[in-house]
Image (cartoon, rainbow, N blue to C red; front, side, top):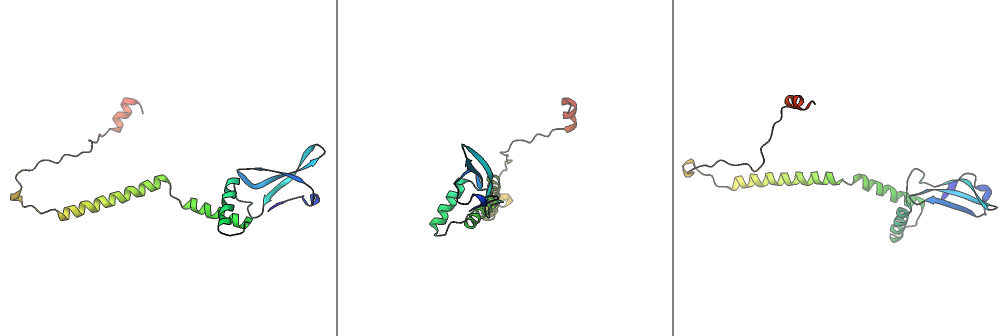
Length: 155
């Protein structure tokens, strides 16, 4: 359902409607006079004036409503749009999901290492024959002197 200003005088006449498929909440209304189309007004979808809805989204929402046995109206489409926007707003980005996964992995790794240390037998000092230094698998960190970099490279 659309409503536009100044259309009362064209009641019962044929008009042409044009719309952008990426936003069907506004249509352009034209009237055929002689061999030319004359622009009359813009008509806005009632209840959807502040929203943006593509033709594909409207068709998908209509199918969902039909499958649920609901009637298709501007209010029902508006509710679908609002639910979609809420879902998108609550959806976590890929980066957020990766951070969450990393936190879970870290916490399970810490818990596993605690459990392993509790489960390992306690060795007495006389039971240990020799100790070898533990080598780290991480590369050595290189420390840079900021003042030296400024002098050498002119930062």
